[in-house]
Every structure is written in C-alpha cells, then in structure tokens.
Image (cartoon, rainbow, N blue to C red):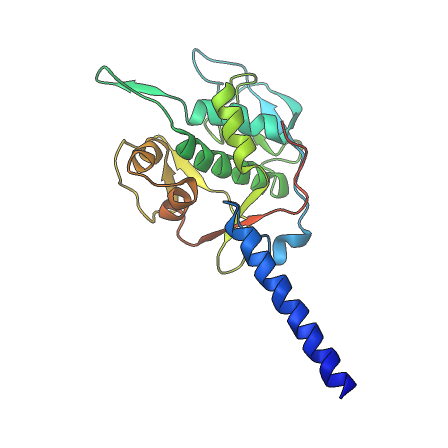
Length: 221
C-alpha cells in the first residue's frame, strides 16, 4: 500500500514536471536540446588561414597566416559578407532578421564541422570562397543581433544527430532549391518575405536536419 501510494506520488510529480517543461518550451522559439550531441563540446575558437585580400574578397591561394578567431565573431563577420545586402536591376534587397538568423546557423555549423574535420593540419578552414568568406570587422549591428538570437542552436542530421557542413551560396531571389541540402542565400530573403521563420527556412533547404539547443554554448557577443 505504502509503495503504491509512493509510486502514485512519483508519477504525479513526473506529470507535473512534464507539463511544466512543455509549457516552458512553448514560450520559447528555441528547440529543446536532446540527443547524442549533448556531450559534444562547442568550439569557442577556429583556426582560420588568412589569405591576402583581393579587390573585394580574399585570394584563394598564395601565402597565408593562421589566426585563432573567436567563433562568435567569426560567425558574425562571415554572415555579413555571405548574407550581405545586394542590388540587382536597380533594386536593393536587404536581408531581414529571419533570413539572417537562418544564415547564422548555417555559417556556425559549417565552421563547427571543420573545427572537428580540419582542412589542413595547421588550420580548420580558410577565409576565402573555398570555404566561407571571412573579413574581420565586417559585421554590423543587424548581423550581431541575428547571431545573438540563435546562439547555441545546433543543426544536426535528423537521422543520425551528427553535425554536418551546411552548404550555401548566392542563388537567386526565388523559391528554387527546395530540399536541395544547399541554401540559396538570396532565396532565404525571398522565403522570409513570404513569411517563413528562420527555422522554416532551414527546414526548407536542409530537410534531413533537426535543431537542438546546446546546454553550454560559448560566451556570446
């Protein structure tokens, strides 16, 4: 009898906890962190090979120096270039907050992947178009805000929960490339303009993925 009452109490407490947890999650846009990546340490710095600057972007060959860059600063500065506003036919397109948040997650996970799978023994990835274009100090406030909004979000394969390097490129301002496992940077603006949230944009381009929240992300901006 006492054991049954005790068991009923435990079950009741567990149900209350579950309801409270679900209620808390419903109040946030960030996904709960579960799964095998729970023990995966988030890299706080990246070893970036710096090629000299060309006219607009870093060169893709030649001598380079290696610099250890804070991950969060790297993400913000890459985001500013890879997902930078552009003008076509006299019309200027600006990346909205939702498009930038989606881009920030893709940029973050690309860098994270290469911190675990370095391009060369002496560096993780370089600053050129061979990887993601990194130009120190390029981030503006809207890029910083986007990175802050999603910081700690982890994108993994839905079936294996392994991290992967999300591919992304210029693309066009349309809905092309759906489920291609490659995000159109300009297409992300289009989707945001159609009302897509940053999580929906990521699911659109990376269908075999899921978003988790890291329990111990590196310090923010």
